[in-house]
Amino acid sequence: MRHLTATTFVLLTLATPPPAEAVEFLFSGYGTVSYALSDRPYAYQRSIDNHGTLLSDTTLGLQLDTRFSSNFSATLQGKVAPANDTEKQWDPKISWAFLSWQPANSWMLRAGKMRVPLYLNAENKDVGVTFDVARLPAEVYGIAPTSDFVGGSITKSWSREEGEWIVDAYWGQGNTDIRTYLRDGIPGTIAAGEHYAPVEIEARGLALTYHPKNNDTYRVGFHLATPKSANNTSWAYDVAEVPYNALLAPGVHYYTDSAPGIKRYNQVNMPILAFGTSLNLPEDYTLTAEYFHNWVQGEEALTVDGGYATLLKKIDKWSPYVTFAGLRSGSRLLKRYQTLNASSIPGLLPGATVINASQRALADAQTAFDQTSWTIGIAYAFSPVSKIKTEWTNVRVGEVPGFVDSPSGNGVSNQNVNLLTLSYSFAF
Image (tube, one colour):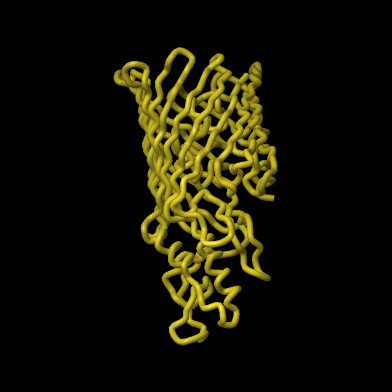
């Protein structure tokens, strides 16, 4: 139903009568076939394990651009990619569907379904041929609250002698699904494995981009996402800070999200500061770096910082590169996870099996990250629209599992995960 609502809005928008001029159509497409393999039996980023998978980044998309006049056009893009709300399935969806009106060369107004201008590769992240890395760093691109929204945007540009300045402002609604992986579940209550909760997100923000004459790029953005539970549930954030004693035994306590004093929310405000740059260096080197800081208003424990830096060199059709990336939640949230993960009551007490399982489930429900990674890769361009890439990534998982689906037991921490990716991207 959430997808139908967005699609209905877009179709009504596209039905707006255009000016009576000759209509031009441009049909294009893109695709990436990507195989990823790790050296661990548990899954990393939902699907990558030691069995290998095509479900990490494989995507196929088609786009139709319709130009009604010199300043009025429509864009419709559909894609088939791994589903965001279920495991090991493909999901055909409308990724773009918007009208564009350009009243002057320096102004652009859009309405419909668009991509949030959060990161440098936000608009083209599905089109693998437009960048040389095999996988965009998960430490930045893997945790955006939402990538698409239905609404409106305004773009204003200024051309100066030193370069071009661009301001993007947007406001709209998006939908996503929050994934939680429970290593054990709770007997008789919640099954182990993946669980998805639908979330509605109001997204708005500003992004300032500067392109100097040497084709470098600098971007800074402030974004505000307001997630709201789509099924009338609420979230408890301070679970591990309110011990609960149900008179099990003197000095014995555990944690529960329904204890007196627990704060609950059905929507929150999440401000995001994002910075990005791409620099053309001497000797055909390129340095690309992005950083973001995200927090939840009223919950100072829920902060996260992520970033990466990629150094790439062009050697004819070859592009070797190295990337360092990191992602870390605030210390209070990491401590919250550790407290819940270590919490247990003596096994002889009534209900100990269920209570101890619930402590691990509460720990798994904390959206916490602590990891760094190194990547070495290379790309080869057969042509401007055909590219093959491969890379090796070493991920150091720190105090919390983060992107890892922990196996039953104590959870994954302080381990290395090695990933190998091979992909082919094209466009036409």
